[in-house]
Image (cartoon, one colour):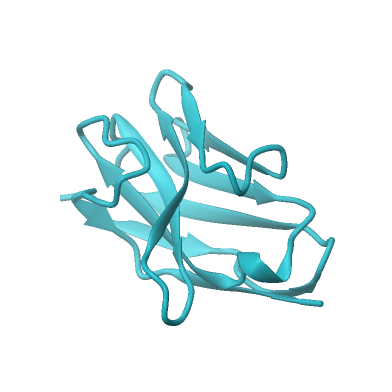
Length: 118
């Protein structure tokens, strides 16, 4: 069992930045960030393997950066140049397998809300 607790969500103006954090009870092979806006399906945003390999959704490439601190067992998502369409509940996820941006992850946090106003 892996517990995940997200933090850092907030309301910001378009063009602003936020940094999300996910405190994990343990680091798994794959960890990532997903988001779900009202009325939309959950989508993968960015994932990272323990070895540092990352994958991003096309919609956030060049604006978002995923990273982790293995010693602190914490996952981060630096979000820059935020757009109103980035508004969503952001979830941290973890799994022992490489699942990429699919949402079949075994462990999930409760989410943190990001709202971007124009």
